[in-house]
Length: 247
Image (cartoon, rainbow, N blue to C red; front, top):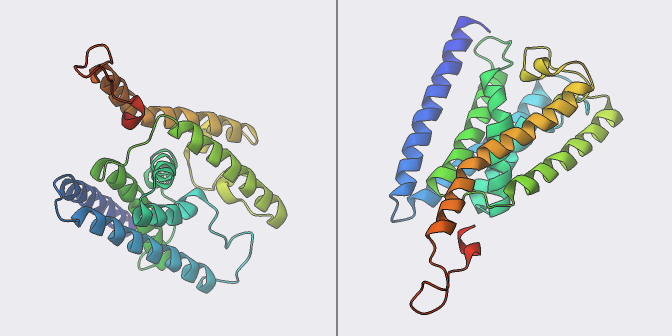
């Protein structure tokens, strides 16, 4: 990565951090629908990025099924994020939250940006990774669509099935989506997990640990709410509050 590209990339990260703070602040004090407007703006931005990815793939050289499908986690997460921001359903937000903060963020920390500016691939890589993480934090922190008590189990099962599907595509096309056949050329966290196929199994365990860690704050919040909800024996009307409303 050249110094110019590095400065551009760091500048993008700074803009993303500022945008996340501002968006979340607006949503938390929102009284006239600005929070939903921001979510839909992010959805349109993410969808535009997804379409830009297709444009880049088809114009950067001959299209090949082993290369030109949006099956890397960071690529498919863009479309998940666009859908989550537009519809804001519980499951979509949960998948986005865990995928973004346990997976996509690794692509931000160890970017694969070999090309110099100006370059469309550099722009779409930066926009895609950062926008997905911004959207995930905004929906959970800003709009407070928090993971429920079964979120880790649901998202992990979805992730396992998606990985199995991607492995089938790799086998069928000779591709390396999700880096299931070999590790990326640039350094990544997978380099710490040993040779193939062990790094895949270890990555699965590490992903589970990350999911549990990301869910830990909400586990504490739910535990605190259970302790503060009046029990049936202590309420004046003799009726307690259903815990499911808080989970």
